[in-house]
Image (cartoon, rainbow, N blue to C red; front, side, top):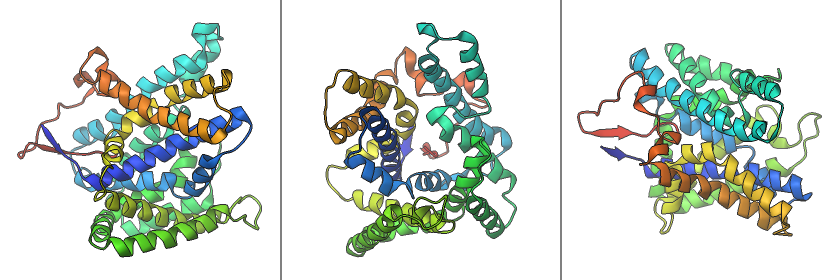
Length: 350
């Protein structure tokens, strides 16, 4: 079955997932080596829009599935992500709990049980997506203006209960809703960027200057480290950054040698699920064996391994016994997917 993919969407997802891997890699290396490097500046620059753009992209295609029957919807938007969450929860837990190395088995089991209600480590995004999908389907008859206003108020409220689910729901749902409600405008923006690349590049330069000012300027208010973190400003910075990524991703479609970015985006789920282990292993090897003195070089190396490692694992397992690592088996489906009349499927949120 042939899959029709939209190039700029894959480019945008590639940018997003690389930025996520970069953040975890750079911060982890910086803590381990006691310093900062170039990637720390890139991470700080991307902070206002890194996750907002991921959620905007995740909401883009929801309008195509939201009115389907609940069984099909739950299979594709809940069971799909639940399967990968619990599979990779177990994989990460095996390494983090260190039961195999003499760790406390009761403490490890408590940690595993807690992960059912408190998202485990880097998997919180996978945990939260089904909640966004179901919430939006339940509220689909509510006015989009009311939904966006309520979600914007939640983001501005800075909910800090200490529980990841409500805190991240409040902080991120606005961007997911924005992608869902304004999907036609997002696609129009990408088309306009490709038609007028000169103007698009100028806007990107202006945006980069404005984003850098907000991301690196200290805030005069306690509890808000930068101007970009201020209420309402964060909303504007997140949406502007998401738009910038869309424009950049659209322009990348017409550049030679950018197939690797599209490939990363097309396999963003594999990267997001699998980057933790090669990233951690690379960081430990570099630090323990003193392989690099530069934080910048070490951060870049760990980021590269964190992105490439899952892609190699995905490629090597997609037709073998272990293909269940990145492909949901048929017996974990509520309904066997049937091809459309034209034999085409469309890409999902990741």
